[in-house]
Length: 250
Length: 318
Ligand SMILES: [Fe+2]
Ligand SMILES: [Fe+2]
Figure 1 (cartoon, each protein chain N blue to C red):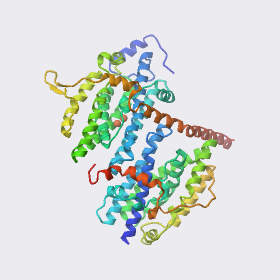
Figure 2 (cartoon, rainbow over the protein chains, first blue to last red):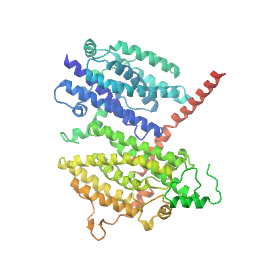
Figure 3 (cartoon, rainbow over the protein chains, first blue to last red):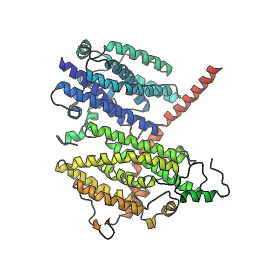
Figure 4 (tube, rainbow over the protein chains, first blue to last red):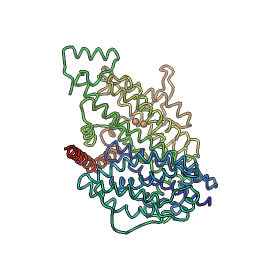
């Protein structure tokens, strides 16, 4: 039972960490200065969230692991973020489309988690929901601008959406951990989140003149540690100092 | 639009400068004063922007999540400094696009220090401690600059810079309190960054092309050599506190001058890096050019979308 609780919070922490890591790759390389600031800021919100969630996960586990031990000393197979978070940043269209798909999910998720029976998690959610509502406004605005901008921006956004869509199912695929958390009033039912997410996303995509892909290719496995081939490279980079100089303080 | 020259305008300008008051965008100013400021402020803005790159290089590899978060916040601050400064320069009638074109084409300079590579985690500490530290010495002095918008931008910037310096120093402290390999990493970073940091203050006063006029107009308030001396004096105690050795065998206290004497700066290296010969000159500019080129379709789409929205608003109103 407490094992499911740990797994649940760890998953949320890993999602935040890995998307924060990806966003931070944009630093100094965005299309203009205001976007450099916005990317760094969004990355920072996710890293901050990851720190709180991983610390909480470590406490739930009770094995003495802190945020850094969880972030830096686990192997790829032990990470349980959804695949959507770990895909390489691609172009600006890909990054913003992914961000929008995640931001809407996070907004509804953290809104619901504000009422979690886990008070620590509810506290984290209260902070995260404010950030997510801001993130969501920003990424939705970009989806509209780029979807309904020039031919080129439309083409790039549609192809980003086509690539990303098959990774969204995994977010809402409930397993035993999700069921246990829902039963204990710790987490909301995923089916309900999916309904809210789909309504928002479909409405915005229509406004942005983009169409939901109709192929049925789906990928999943992140929760069980079956990642894309990009994940190992991401971790090798992120963990390099802790791995090459074990046990030191930085 | 530049303010129209009227009789007595120059005398009023001189009197404002003499009275330690600020020149504001609406005031008449000599064309050379304006050009001198545009050069200095835009160069400063470019330095903040290019300065994101050497430290940005370490964000994805920061060794703890706390360090990752503070480094992200720092690099975000630097981009923000770039924005304040471009805005200050725009009050002088030059557009951000023009300034950025000058950077990308190599007509405009940025701080040469960023043409050195950041090779280890200790470099992130050394950059914060030394490079931000040197920037503070320079910028605190510039807070009294005679051009109002520049002075006000600098006051905001200085607050954040001192935070950056403390973070950098704390990274160095942690390394120096760690294992011998960590301490060696810190010493190696200090060895590589010390002299380039001293060069940040610019050529000796006697050789500085723009200095004298800038001092008269109170754009600059203290000379390159004065500021460099101040930085050396403050750094000696800090290095001692860390247990690190400044890489200068001529460094010693001079009681008669009440300052530290220090060794000769390699001005050939300074000129070489300034003129494009440094390790990272090409890669820094390439990174900025790539960001600009890769972002072109995004900026175009923004304009097109804004046009469409305007047209729709007109349609709706009709
Ligand atoms: Fe700065
Ligand atoms: Fe700084």
